[in-house]
Image 1 (tube, rainbow, N blue to C red):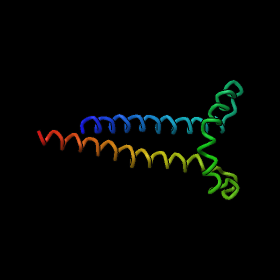
Image 2: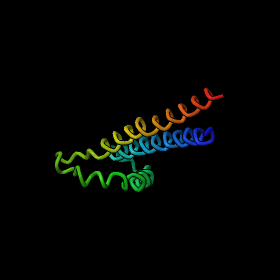
Image 3: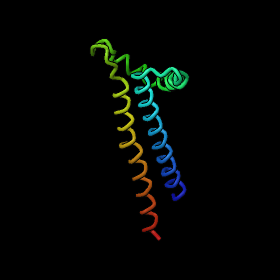
Image 4: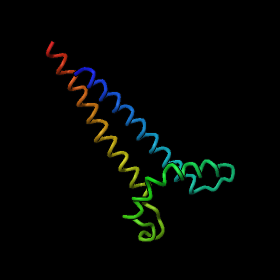
Length: 107
């Protein structure tokens, strides 16, 4: 039981870091799309390839031409990442800590 609870805590921390890094990569891509800096072209290409698989399905439901050419997909994906962080990561962590607390009360 302790092993599983610690495993859940580790998974929740890793998910938290992955979601945070994904969010920052998406934010950097958006900022670099606003400002054209020739020396950062290779960075923007890498960020494009990292984020496009996440943004493309959202654009099917919210195409930019419906909102006057403004692409809302990065904002929607960031909101989904925040939701996953709050709902999934915190739930896993709280559940694991509750399991550890119950185990300590037994002994």
